[in-house]
Amino acid sequence: MITYIDLPEGTGVRQLPFFLAMEEYAAKYLDRSSDYFFMWRVRPTVIIGRNQLMDTEVNREYCSANGIEIWRRKSGGGCVYADPNNIMFSYVTDARGSVAETFGSYTERVAAFLRSLGLEAEAGSRNDVSIDGRKVSGNAFYQLPGGRCIAHGTMLFDVDMERMSGAITPSQAKLASKGVASVRSRVTSVQSYLPDMTIEAFMDRAQAYMSDARIQLTEADVREIERLEEIYHTDEWLRGRNPAGDMAIERRIDGVGDFRISMTIEGGRIKRVNMAGDFFMTADLDSGLLDRLRGAEYSREGIYAALDDVDPERVVMGLTREMIADMLMG
Image (cartoon, rainbow, N blue to C red):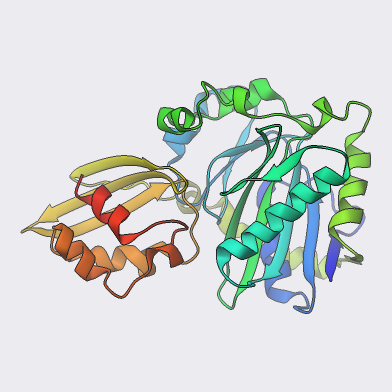
């Protein structure tokens, strides 16, 4: 069963962190016999992935001049833009099989909903849902301790493409890998295919397709969500990983993501290592990978030895020991 979550009447306009905290609340405290789904809309906002570097992904000057907010989420993946004509989907479920299977079942359900409207939609191999080969929905995923999973993403209904292009600054490697020259050229909107459908009608259809029951949260629920929301407003969280080291390595691995690695080598060993980018995490990055590399001999053999009992794909989707060694060894 999938239950749709409503907020109490009169909750008012909320910033993006409230809805990220609402996902966490549903995952942690609502009855686990059901999955949960809800939709939300925000003022013009850029949302960056957990491990991304803000200054390399976002045109902060443009955002400031145009009243665009910037927030960081807990899931991995890339930078996305949202505004009132863009709908955000949130889905809470239990892990079923591998992370890739759980995430893939969600993106396929979104694509199937669009197909139910007569659109030629398909879910991509990583995180996108596209219509005629152009992205209409970008999604991300993360798993909480205990196995509960959160998937969320954009639905570009009638988004302001000019503001999106101005606010987000993807790497040239990412653009080149997709065979396009700009953000605008690789995205589309639902309304360009369904010009007579209003955003309210679209949301009604989405709710009916994506859920089969409904609950309304209480004022007490909202207060707890507000408590969970607080971390997203801290400077430390917003800054994220801003690595500093003696070596800086940038790589893009098709199907896995962009990586920006900083590393300090002393006495032939890795003293410090940090990793940022738009990759998808499936477990904690530090305890799962980076802590094991710190202190390792700086050689391909030393990296393999440090990760001997680790499957990197259980931490970052699609990543292998060979890929890590290739990146760290330059």
